[in-house]
Length: 617
Image (cartoon, rainbow, N blue to C red; front, side, top):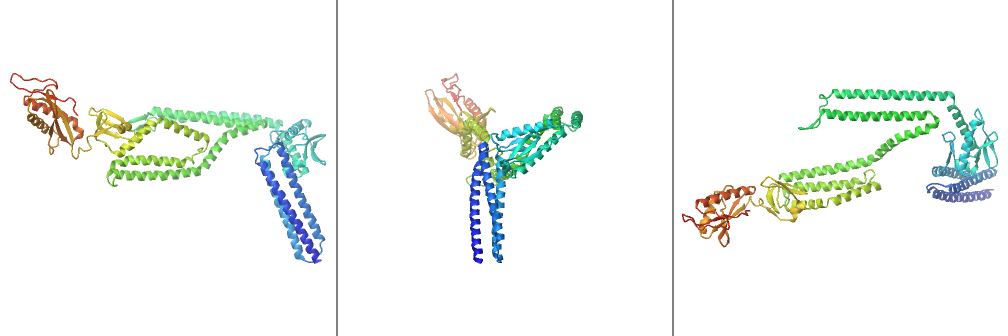
């Protein structure tokens, strides 16, 4: 007996193992095939048939497992043994089959739900509300035809009977039919039951109850009492709407009166120092305009919701009311959901901005300290501090934008990227000259050819440097003319700086004169040096000197040179020097002549001539 029990136990174990392996393989195959179908965008009619076949196969496996379990239980009951351990082992094996069957059942339910979520079912909605969906065809009729036909038959039921029609379910070999009199409303097949996960008879009764409930609701909604209530509700809603609009106008009129009463008191216009942006009257007009706009918006919202209520009163237009509500609340919900979804990115953007902001503030502090001379960096000039800070700030902000770009809403969309590329292209094409000026400005900054306040000559323009930016350099001439020179022109041309060496060794101011050959050169030298010594703002510790620059046909050219530390006063110094030269030569009775005209003598016997070079630098 014990050996029979062992052989039977081994046989049962073998059968169970083979059955479980087979069921697992079948389940995996079904799962793979079903998932391949789900991946499609929508299941067409032929795909529905394939899925139905798979569900039939899965159901047959479930039935086979159930039969195997029943057979094992029957054999276990027939087994006579006193060995409780063997019985317990068999019971555990049967329990494993039941657990496996439960697991497959749960998987099957999940598959059905997944399939129904992607499969196009056709609704049966005779009175606006959907009662159920049809997924399978029946004979030559497609799922769409079946749903249309069932809907049409249900709609005809209220006309066929003054009372709620009594429906019955009649079960046949292949279908379970829902019948009213001799009219078959619908037929439920085994395939329909597979999609719902129940039996034909149970599904037919569910459909029967749904149809009866729908017809009951139709009768209730179309009684004379209900119609009168709806008409009264419409009149009430319209009356309330007119009352709301009336009081909205009254409220906004009252608010305007209160605002106007504050003119000159609480409302006094907007000023910035001495400039008045908005007078009190203009500010009140703007407030009135905003109030009028707000009033219109409130009235439109009240009318919109009233219209929604009116459509919702009648069953035939209830869907329109729901759609109107969706039009209003869906954008608000989408905006709110988008904002909530954007909060993590917004937090990240805020952190990035704070880090860059405080880093820029720290660099600004260092730049100010270097500019003031409090912080000395070997080889780094104080006038480099501010432009260096501006350059670093620009690159830090550009780096910040690169970091936060991917966190901006819509940054990954093709439209956003296209607009960004278009704007970048426009900026790049329109700023080529500006870019060259910026590069030249950076180069000029670190070349240090001049600084603010220097007396310079750039090309043919001379004056005092007023401003030095990345794009242009501004000069003020001796005539108080402000001239803007592009930095690219400064970099390409030559620049003369009168102030760079003036404070240390002094800048030389010179002018030229022409005197006839009959005047001794020593006399000319002495007169020029005496005139230079009497000129103000020249350096006393450096003596002026005279150069004989040329020997021409009729005269000799002399050049007087003086030192000064006042580079910005060169024009005044030259003017005073010319005055003293004229005085000295007049006192020496040397006649002043034009460069190409010379008088040989006068009645007193004085000879000589003087000409001052007209091109004075």
